[in-house]
Image (tube, rainbow, N blue to C red; front, side):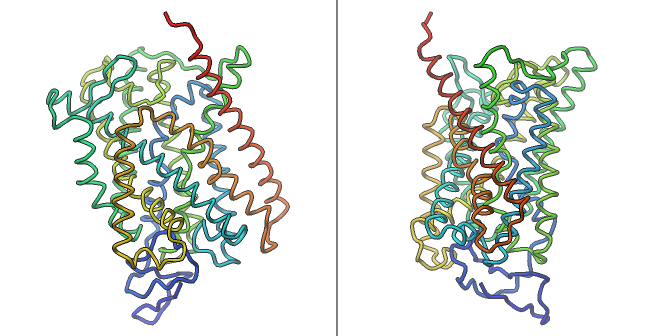
Length: 459
């Protein structure tokens, strides 16, 4: 990585200047990304890009976690996971400095060699493919509708224009892929998406504001009951069910693979820790507000996908308009989150398939082939995978927990440069034990529920 001088002869503070065509996650520390006149990303743009990485589809599942945990433990766990995430990212960034690692994969490679880096790349690919398939499924559900247990939930286009071939799921997703996703994923620098990321965060906030407004109106009218403050634990099965929220909560804060990317493009890279804290604070506020008002609004009727609750009569003036506003705002939000997640997916897949090749940004043919291939796989997955929650549970309990907690803790315990403190190591052991135990119990509970459901006598 070369340090390019600015035209005025000065260097940006702590800045590694990145070419317009530089990959988002450099696969090799020594690759020369060239020189250009780009002087670095802004603080606000970095906050929006990192916040967009964090706030994806997980926001819709968080009200359902309140139904499982109760209001007070639910909010406490959201805050707790945010603090753990901030600690993990701080350790990752600190351990990047001695080895001059420019990516999450670089830190893993520094600690565990090529095998560790490959394992990290595999987890990023699994996590990100799962997430963007979920995004596309949700977009299809919102725009074209979906059927579940024999009940059809009309999509927005079907509700507005009736049932036509051009608003069917496959055609709508094809148009969305070609007209929205394809242009956005062609950018080669993450800072180029700062404006779409700002709009994405704004739409997520609009989703929260509308949900809160509906809940407050119904609360004033006396049409909502006080939600449960604590979980209802009556037996061992209900106790184990509490742990099924862990994969969703872990997935909700996964952004680690884009932190180095954003840092590399900053005009002043010393701002990155402040950017991480600002993003986590913003996203935690969105999560808590959504969870509180969503659970207040629908109570024990809160569905796993809270968007599905917005296809019924809300019992307030302009209820249908508000329903559509909630669903449209979130569908567009997910469209704008998609390219941020896709970029990290593409560069990590390229690192797995072509570890010794030149930088992806300098090979337009390889860049185009991988991009087209990934878009095709995601498009097919969104059309053939029936349930988003299977994807959430799988990625959250496997790849996401590794990316979020186990890998940063393992790097700290390995301590290749002897800079870990006693506090770091104690926290790392705690995170590994907590992550492994919680997710093993979550997987067991989900498997037990599926087996019990399959063995239940049919009426």
